[in-house]
Image 1 (cartoon, helix red, strand yellow):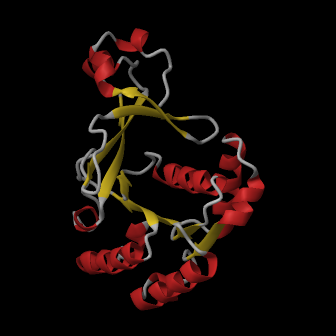
Image 2 (tube, rainbow, N blue to C red):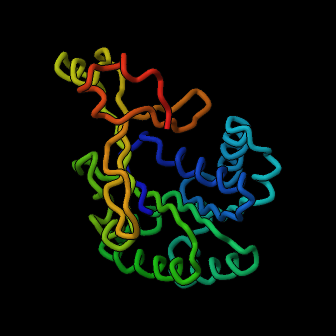
Length: 236
């Protein structure tokens, strides 16, 4: 799955939450960090485990971290990275993978994005690894579309896309539409498409809690059905 959105929409949080959830299910997960050093990622994973009432020992046992933030040999070489992934997959029986961010693997050569995505996609499909590929949007790209850095190179190849967005309420019209005061932020999440299975096509409002977790609240359509009196803080 491609997970995309502009800056500060919660992409990394969702990727970390996914990894911790799989660890809680005793499933081996590889987390490739391209942006943040491993020690910072580890602390974030442990904090999420505590917030999710999952034993942090499961994070230590079932999550493996490959740090590319300082390893430019692997980061910029497709063949070397695939060989490393193959070794990790066989050695540790990896079932799930998070790449944060996939954009970092082709940020200086976006014209080759499709080839880079296709090579990794084929490897992951062969090994049946459920994967979250986090990709960054560029300035000017539509907030709720599957487009990201490299155009549609990621979304056209992978099985589906999850889009996160945020919007600051700046006028009375938006305030009335989203039932929030001017100055607050509305966060939205939607599945843009998934060729592998049927999926929920609605756009949902979500929040990032104080514990740095993604909490899905209610369908955006609820706001046209009477506003917050129908919500009752419902979480999915």
